[in-house]
Structure formats: structure tokens, C-alpha cells
Amino acid sequence: MLTSVDNKKKYSIITYGCQMNFSDSEVVSSILNKHGYQSCDDFANSDIILLNTCSIREKAELTIRKKLESFKKLKKKNSNLKVGVLGCMAERLKDKFLIEEKIVDLVVGPDAYRDIPNLLDEVELGNNAVNVILSKDETYGNIDPSRFNSNGITALVSITRGCDNMCTFCVVPFTRGRERSRDPKSILREIEELKSKGYREITLLGQNVDSYLWYGGGLKKDFKNASELQKKCSLSFSKLLDLIANKFKNMRIRFTTSNPQDMSENVLNTMAKHKNICNHIHLPVQSGSDKVLKLMNRKHTVNDYKKLIDKIKEILPGCGISHDMITGFPNETNEDHRLTIELMKYVKYDFGFMFKYSERPGTLAYKKLSDNVPEKIKQKRLEEIIHLQQEHSFINLKKFIGKNCEVLIEKESKKSASHWAGRNDQNIMVVFPKKNHKPGDLVNVKINNNTSTTLIGTS
Image 1 (tube, rainbow, N blue to C red):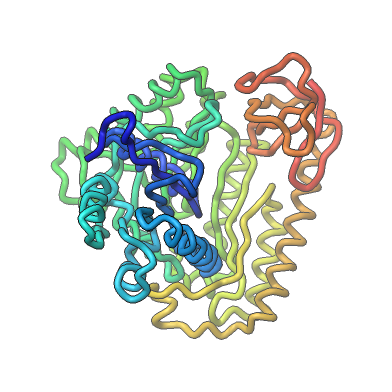
Image 2 (spheres, rainbow, N blue to C red):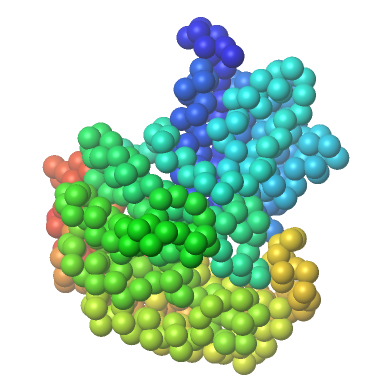
């Protein structure tokens, strides 16, 4: 492996998809740095380009494929350039990428990033390299992420990997494996390191953070076989959250993503107990129809979800609530769509992420259900829920006018060099004049105006 300063090979990482992928890219960067590679923002001058990919929707895969095609030209100009695919597309399309299309040189799954330096050595020898083996215990807990794209103020801290829920539309259990939780000591150590570097806010991250359960290591599904001592000493998500909030009182704490079936009242009470835990919960529901939820293999009913929403509003008045929604799922009728609209009107979310259903090869929905909602109807329903969400967002944000918000300054506003931008407790973006403030400051901002996505104020 080349390790001298003059001969360091340069790598670029392009990340698509969820926050977990961005967190993983920081882990990959750290691994490469420790093995004598150097980060580079210029594709044309890179020796290695890695694409950390997302398979959650067809559109994401199409975007990544276009990017791979663009690198064919670069490879013609630079015969030494190597291109690799990481993440969720790696496991599903390894043979197609490496053997059939021959458009990449290495393919690495989410649990095999420690093996990247060895795989790159194989590539140097002229061999294709692949490792997509899923792990029962890999959490990368002892790796200090490089934070190569960080603003130095907010950071992602991964606490779980994988998912056991087996929603029929989702590829995550197949691409990221079963649920396992990270050693709390390594989580605290990482946050302590971030604190020492001046970070002001962390987001605890996982496919399903509420199912965090540490009992000494291993898959969550094996907890039933743990010893009585392990069970007695186990750490749930609410206990972890309480531990972190107590230890790091001067840092803001967020978490995502929550699953309705796993979120407990204990988590809500812990949030209410600590001022430094932000008052926002991202709570994907996917549909307002019990029929569709059953087809999706979601483990909650609409009534269960409403009760949880009511409990959140009771224990955490003013808590920001956001959602994920899929429209046009197989067999979804006009009545099912109406029920989704009704649920949105019941909750009145602050914001959300809304998508048309697209088949994902390998999932149960792909195997068992016909994608039988016409594209035109999917689009119409999507436009309706987006429009309704915009209405709710505008109304909810208008309620902040005349009130003061505590805002953590993250960056300069995209639209004005004379304004700062940062998020309030409810995860709403706030912009306000710079004055004498700087990134990383917590500022009280009086809200004077709003759009459907942003609050506008003065400090």
C-alpha cells in the first residue's frame, strides 16, 4: 500500500440517499485515510471514485446509474482511475456491475467497509473485487468518522445498524442485514470527541433508533436467549437517550428515524425531562389505510398511530412531527387515499417526505403484489398529499410569528450572504440577519414571517 506523503493515492466519495449513508461515508473516509489514501474533491484528479449508493427507490438508482455512465469518459482519459460502488446497490447489483456491464472495479456492501483497502489492493493487481457479506455484529463502533463534509457544528452518530421490520416495500433488511446495536461506551466516546472539537449538536442515527437495545453485543433478535444478568443490565433507547442528555448538557440532541411500533412513552418522558433534547420526532406512517398498512407489513394500525400522536402532543406540547408517506402502493384505492388525507388532517404534520411507490426487486411486495396503480393516478395522489402538506406546513409555521426561538447557527443562508441559517427546536429552518453572531452560536430569534418551509426573524 502506498503511504508516503508524495505518493498518496487520492479518493473521492459521492453519497446518495439517507443520513445513514452519509454517516457511512465518513467511516469509509476514515478507513482510507488510515491506510495512506488522501481525500480529494476533484474527480478528474482522483485515483479512486467511490459512490455510496441508495436502493430505496427506483429514481435513486437511475440517478446513480447516470453518474456511473459519466465516469466512463473519465476512465477513458485516465486508464488508472478506479470506480467503486458502496452501500445498498452493491449487494443487489454486484454481478451486473462487475461482470455483465463491467462499469466498476469494486463493489462493497455496508458491512464490509473495513475490507476496502484489501479490495483496492486486489484492484491494483488487475482483479475485480467484491465483498457484500452481511455481518451479525459490525457497528464500526471503534472507528472515528472523518467528518470530511462536516460544518463543524452538527454531526451524525450511528447507534444501530440493520432492520428487523421486513416492510414489504423496503430493501433495507436485505442490503443492511438484521438489527444490532452499538456499544454505548463507544457512542459516548464518539460524542465526547465531537464535544472536544467544538460540535454543538448530534443526531443519533439508525434505521430504527427506538429499537436500540444493548445487552453485550449481537443481533437484537437473539436477546431472548441472553442471560438473566444481560437482560437485567440491558440498555434501551430511552435509557441511552437519558444517559447522553445528562452527560452532554451543553449539546443539542436529535434522533432519527423512529418506528411507530417501537416508540415508547419512556422515550417521550425522557425528551420532556431534558431541555437539550430537541422537540422534534420524525415518525413515518407510510399510509392512512389499515388495509394498505397490512399489505406493507407495518406493525401498527392507524388507530395505534393516532394514539401515539395524541400521547406525543400530551407529553411534548409543541413538538414538531414529520412523516414519510408512500402513495400508489399496490391495491391502493381512492378510499385508501382518502384515509391517508384524513390522517394527515388529523395530525397536521410540520413537514414530510412523500413518494410514489416504486417496485424494489427482492422485496416481498415485488414478489407477491402487482404494481397495479396507474402512474397517472400515483402522480395525482402524490400531488394532492404534497399540496396538503404545504398547507399544513405554512399554517404550523405561521404560529411561530411573534414568538422567540432558540436557533443554532449552522451556515450562511443560501439566498442571502447577509443572513445566517439554522434550525430551531422543532427542526424548522430559521434565517435572520447576521449581526455579530457566528456559526455555532445559539441565538434567540424573534420570528416575523414565514414560508411553508422556513421561519424568518431577527435576533
